[in-house]
Length: 116
Image (cartoon, rainbow, N blue to C red; front, side):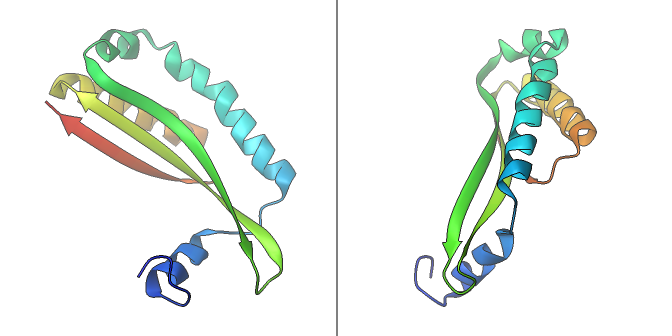
C-alpha cells in the first residue's frame, strides 16, 4: 500500500532513489535543457506537432530524505506525453526517442500516448 511504512510499494520506490551529488544533478538537468532545444527546432516534428492536442517532454527530479541512511537521495525521470492524431503521435515518438537515444541520460523514460 503506497504511503504505508514498510509496504512493498514504498520499498520499490526507495530502490529508484540514489545518492546523486547535487552538481551531477544540476549538470544533467542543464544538459537536458540545452540539448532539448535541438528537438524543438526539428521542422518535421514542428509540422506534425500542430496535429497534437498535447505534447511535452520533461525531465523531473525528485528528492527524498532517507532517514535510515541520514541523507537525501534523488532520481531523475523523463516523462513524455503525446496526444493526437495517430500519424502525428508516431512521428513525435520517433523523433523524441531518437533524441533520447542520442542524449544517453541517467534516467528512465515514461511514455504516455493517446491516439485519436
